[in-house]
Length: 260
Image (tube, rainbow, N blue to C red; front, top):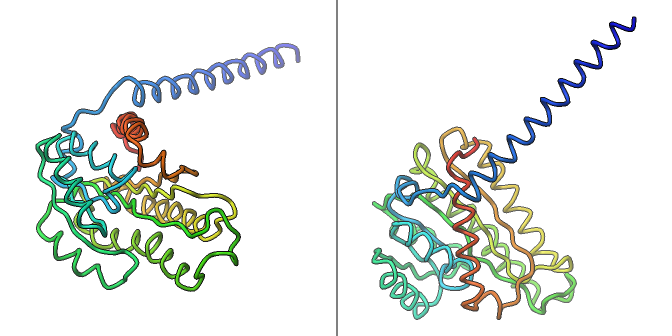
């Protein structure tokens, strides 16, 4: 009996040591892939020639556009303000030497996607960043305190949710075998009381999970980055953009071994 118990404890000890070793190995693998072993620019270039970014003229979307251009991708900026599109396109072209294409649309409307489809035709798209988003006013506020609530509900659903699904529908078919879709949705002023924004964030996260489950085996990477409350003056500051670019560079290192 004593021999049996002794052997049992030995086996239990071996199992515990192996488990600890496995956890340490996973931790070291994470550190190597995300902190030290950077992904070469050729990785992103292998996904396709173009990165499509909605809401790419301000804040996080602008940071994504600059970062992917630095990685050697041409950029498609989709936003509603022509002046901002022209300005940001010139900045990216001068800084990176990459080609920038602009598409002026207002995502509040639902009849824009045929126009977007026509302008994307023939482009080898490797990355889609669904970044466009709007917030209700005042912020924060309870649901029934939203200004012009009927219009605001429709507008937020169209911009924050419909745009994600429709843009994915446009781009995903040609990405199936060879590309990555990145789906960060940046709702910059979110709080618990901002109920519509909160629910749209959850929708984007769940939609991204579902697409990853369905298309991860095809070599497509789908991620949802949902950010918390960021004041506008921080979101659009140069300091914030620099920090965001550093964040994107660090996150990019984890794509070396994507999980299906």
